[in-house]
Image (cartoon, rainbow, N blue to C red; front, side, top):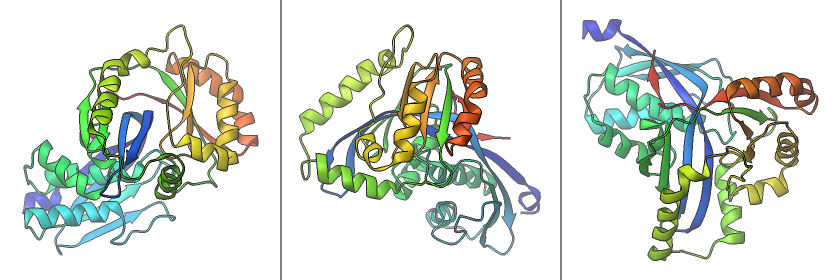
Length: 311
């Protein structure tokens, strides 16, 4: 225990974007049947973990807009891990927040997965990836993806994962108005009311959509020499109701050398993809003032081959 008490673990918790988000239908369990491609990007939160001798989970952060109580996914993850492992160890956790909140970049889900991975090591639990993914699926639909990260096909409500063997080297620009956030739950609800048949359970259709995405996923992400549209069904709802998203997509569409552009997740963050990070940097430099004047924060990012990592 003395050795554990001196140990500090620091972990990088990356954001994600959706390179494909298809809502197949509403399920009987209340969730939506999805077919997605998710990709980690190098916009990170940082989490520090140390043993707490009092057996408590204590969370602190440099972000004042987050609850640090039991409703925070980091605290939920730590408590679930303690409960399932039947231990009474605690942890002091500090979150340095860089991924914007309510942005469609799944920062909270990434932090939850990072907590499972970090405390599994800090508490010397030796749980395997399958067990961690199972725990993650109890916490939220996006969280299992982050256990392995990189680029993956995500089916079901997000918990059925298939790794894609690819290391895409594109650069991208992200745009987000810092004063705008979108409720994922509300967006899915609105989409469901407008476009989903109740309790869609046609297994043949679901399997056909999954097969099509498996067969074509990497081909669809070959942007060379032609411009493609990334499918995001939720954009149908959010773009029409949110001027910030509509304007961001318009600004990105006008960028020179933009290969494709889309909203990520349930928004409001939007992104444009370029052939490499240097091209993305040049475009951001040329347009930074315009983005700022229109009210947007902006970032240049690259795709990650791996997800959560220890420092």
